[in-house]
Image 1 (tube, rainbow, N blue to C red):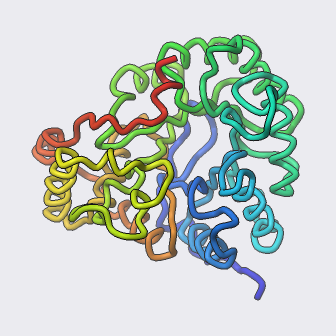
Image 2: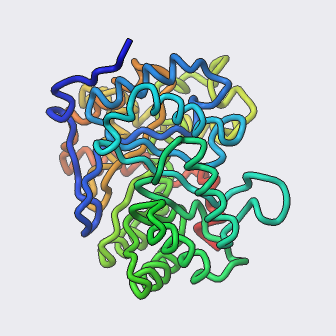
Length: 341
C-alpha cells in the first residue's frame, strides 16, 4: 500500500535550532547504526521508519559502514526511500558519514580526501539520493592533515552532494581547529556528533563550551549507552540482548559497579514516572547546547517509548543532584581514541 504520513506529524515533536544555523532538528532523531542491515527483515525497517516520520522524526542518520554487512543500512534505506519517502524528500534530513574502515586497501579508511569523497559518491548511489543533508567526518584522523579532511567536506558541499558539513567524536581542541578551517573555506561547520550519556560525560564542559562559542550544533549518539541505560540489564545480561552477542557492547562493560549505578538511576526514573531510557534521553536534552538525541530502534514499540521521553523533559535541581551521584564515568566510551587523538 502507498505510504501516506500522518497529517499531524509535526504537532508533537519538538524542534531545536542547530547551533547558529537556520536548520531545525527534531529533539529525537533516528539512527540506523544497528537494526537496519541485511540481517533484519526489510518490513521491520519499513515499519520503524514510517512510524518515526509519523511522529515528527525528520532526521535519519546513517554511515557508509552501517549494517551488517557494510553499506547494507544505506541500501535498505535507499530501497525504502524510493518506495515510501521520495515524495517527502524536502521534509527529511538525511545524513551519512565516512571515516572508519569501509573497503580493502589504503583508500577505504580514515580521513583522506580520496576516501571521503569516494565514499560519499558510493553512499549516494546506495541510497538513491542526489545529495545528503549532512556529510560527516566520522572520526578525527591524526595521520591526515586536518585541512585536507575539512577541505573534502567543503568540496562535498560545493559540489552539491551535501548541504551541510559535520564532524563526529572530535576533541574540543580539534573541533575548534576544524571550525576555523571551515570558516576560512566559507563552509561553516554545522554540527558535531559525539557519544554522550549518563555513563559517558566526556563532552562536559570543554567540548560543549567550544560548540557554544563556535555556534555549532550538537547531536549526541549512544544516549542510552548502547542499551545499558534501559530496563534490559537491571538483572544481568539476558539472552538475545546486544551484550549477549559479539559486537560493540562488550559484556565486560556491565560490571557490578556499573549495574549498581544503572539500578539506582532506574529508581530515580520511576519516581519521575518514566522508564530509565526515557529519563536518560531527557537528561541528555537538558542542556540547551544539545540539539538532538540520536536513538536506535529494533521495533516500533521501542521507538514510541523513546519518543515519549519528550513528554517530561523538566528536571528539578534535587533530581539533577541525585542523578549526579550515579551518572558518573563508567569507561564505556569505545570511541575515545578519536576524541583523544
